[in-house]
Amino acid sequence: MDWQIEHEVSDDMSSWNHGFVQTRLVKYLPEEDRFTTNMEVSLDISSLDLTKFDLKAKEELKPDVCLYPAQRRGLCKPRDILKMSEMPLLAIEILSPRQGMDDILAKFQVYFALGIKSCWLVVPAIEVITVYSAVDNFKSFDKGDQEVVDEVLNVRIPVGKIFS
Image (cartoon, rainbow, N blue to C red):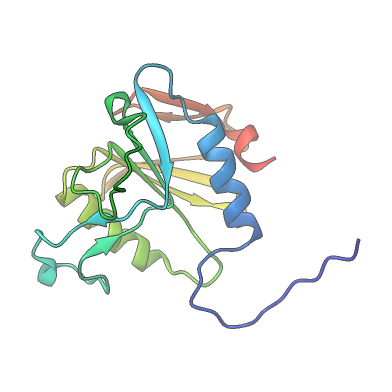
């Protein structure tokens, strides 16, 4: 099979690496009895005054991966939830080829203002995961580390499994 890399301009932030890493994160994030994961959940941010944040979004943000408390699990109902007012414990953003760091950090400011406990920035191009417990408090993990460690949520996942 012949693979081609396309460089067309698009508003869509997804890419092969983005989707691959997103799938791996969902696979390896612990659920056990403590958590449940979800992808691309729209978070309702309309109650927050966004004028102090340099953010384009007005009413919702959509993290690539969210980690919720376990009690959120299994709540499929005939009438779906289009925007979550309940915030996740963890919001994960995967840097896409056409996305800037400033955009992600602006989102993290909003996430922390909404009460989200931890944020991860995943950069597939250089195989790095940075765990933020606040916008100015973070630690980075790469393939030289065995695990990504989120001390706030007591979550550990193997770095090598996310990128390989």
